[in-house]
Structure formats: C-alpha cells, structure tokens
Length: 124
Image 1 (cartoon, rainbow, N blue to C red):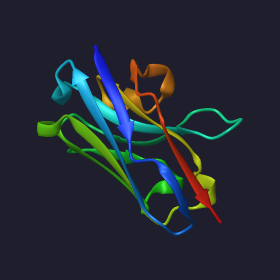
Image 2 (spheres, rainbow, N blue to C red):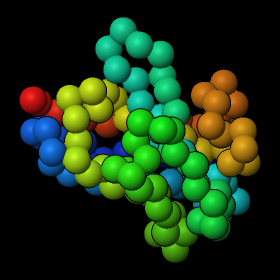
Image 3 (cartoon, one colour):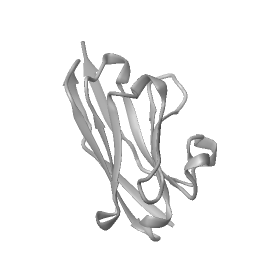
C-alpha cells in the first residue's frame, strides 16, 4: 500500500511557474514508478508525465514537453512536477500516481495508487 499526498497547487497567471510536490508513505517508494495526471472540468483524467523508479527514464505528453519537468527524490520519498510557462489550458486538478512499471503507469486504468489531487488554476 502506498499513500500519496500532493501539495503546491494554486492560482497563477499565464506564463507563471508552479512546482507540485507529492510525498509517499507506506510501501518502499524506490520500488515504484511515479506519474502525474490531470483532470480538467468535464474532461477525462489524462497522463502528463512519468518517471521510473530510479529516475533514469521520463515520459511526457506532447503538450507539456519542454515546459514541465518531472523529478523524484527517493531519499525524501517524493516526486515533483515543475511547471513553467503555464497556460490557461493547464487549469486542472493534478493527481500524483504510483505503480510498478513506467510502461504501464501512463494509462490511468493501470494505476493502483492515487493522491487526492491538487488544484492548479491559470488565468489569462
């Protein structure tokens, strides 16, 4: 079992930056691939970024590549999402996710553990 708690959301203007954090507790954090998803009002939850258990591989969805960076600190059992040059279309609830493999965690149906979500709102 893994418990995930996100923080760092907020209201910002277009072009600003935010850093989301997710702290894990429970099972050994270094065994898990980690990911961020987001869900905008009225839309399905979508994959944003993923990182494997030791940080060696990272995947991004096209519309955030070059603006968002996922990272992790296994000593602090934490994963981060640095979001730069935010756009109004980035407005959503952002969810931290944990799973056994990076190749499967990119699909929300395969995610066994979720955080409660952090609201990010970007004004024009």
